[in-house]
Length: 562
Image (cartoon, rainbow, N blue to C red; front, side, top):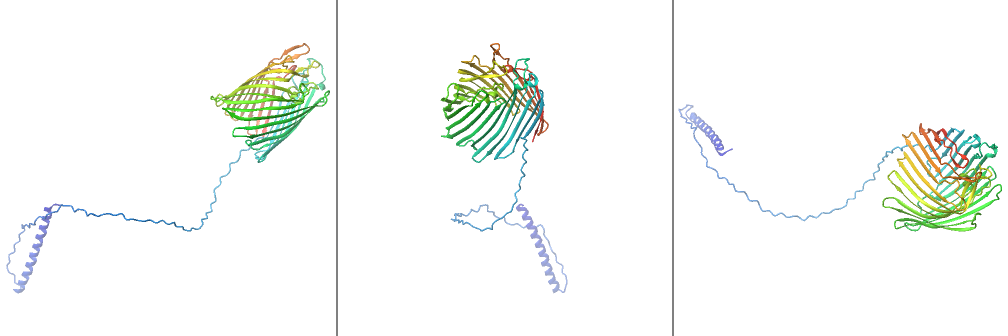
């Protein structure tokens, strides 16, 4: 709003005030005159001028700013005091019931099973395994197996064979000591069917049975990584056959180990064997073997070294007797930058030989076959192992050994269906070259391929009779959709020589080629059916001279787990 407009408003208001005042003054004056003149009205002329202009002087305006007052601000000195306030509060007792999650039920174990089946050659089969489940302190159970073929490859019943064995076992896990024990038996039935073709024989004279009873018990550390470890126990075996052979073996083992430093460990292994044998024409013969083997394991320059010696006393009646033998023992391992591991070592030992071991290798021995220990005077070995990928591994190596009293099998000149045990009391050299390749894909597919070559250089025996020169084996397992399980096995064994007393010549046996297959279908976790196919090529090969093996064999059955 400007000054001129304000001025006009003031002028108008002033004019109206003056006009009103004039009328009021005139009225009052006229009333007085009227009252004086008794109410007579005189002629009066009133003149109103409206164009009058009231002029006001201009006001002076001061535009100077008022200077701020100079105020000095001072910071007051303030002191703060803190004091702890301990307010006693009543105890708060909140009762809350926690929400507990339900434990997930454990999967039921089906470790126990019963198998039953039947196959050609009139072969019944029965097997059972029973044990306790999920016990942190105790494990116990029993196993039974029966497989008997009434007929065989030669003259039906005259070449039948079978096996029946069983055992009861138990193990108790204490806080510091673990105790284990086992009692069992093994019965094997054979027939001497290696007689000449078209020869009339009495079936009762062909029978041979081996019965073995055994009992054992051991005490050892519960913690495997204890600084001081030990193992002590015994084993007793007793063998009889269908003739008059008897053999008892009592063995005591005592092993201990203890840490000397951070990467050094000492071990002492010892055992005592007392072997007694008796037969038709053989008086009681007792052999003793006492072995002490102290070793020291340590690391040096990237090598893991195990070194020591063996001191062995034995009183064998063949060759040197009542003698103490010393053998150096050493083994070193070194890991290469590529991840492979190389190893090498030297060794020597008295290898215990019993009638039970001989009859497991060759059940067709003639009566009065004697067992003598084998002296491995020296062995040098080395090799390499490692992983080619996350699923494939390999191992290969070579060993060179010398032996005294190495044993071999020869057909008897009196009865070709029975075998003699002959010993080379000179020095036998043996070279073994081997290679192994393994493959494992998520436990669904496994495959192992191995090849071995053995080269013998005998001294007092013309050939290494009934010992192979090579063996190639392949084993594979495969699982399909958790319903099918397949197992395949193939092997080839060759280079076996025999001696024919009728012709006086060495015999080269044909290579043994065998292919076996097993398939199993799981109807459920508890019930399945299986079929085994052995010797699919139906090759009646001979590993022992005059003893052809069975041809194609089939065995089918079922399994129930609980």
